[in-house]
Length: 79
Image (cartoon, helix red, strand yellow):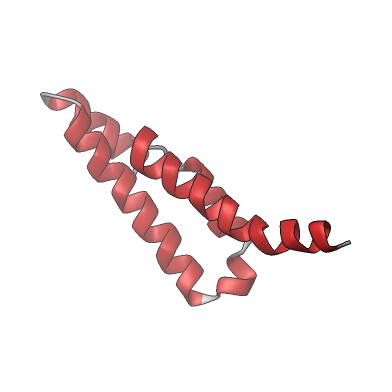
């Protein structure tokens, strides 16, 4: 039906909005990393770069969020 086709067309945009919301509001990279892994074959090298950048962001976020050496150790453990 027309409504079903509309939902299918909107689905990737809704999913991307949810991923962006998760990154911006919750500082949670897990959904974005999972999305990149799921679409790795379709994304090719760009998918690998995206995953690397997301993991770099996670390390930086750990360094920023914790004061003192606790954040450093958490970042090192994550890396």
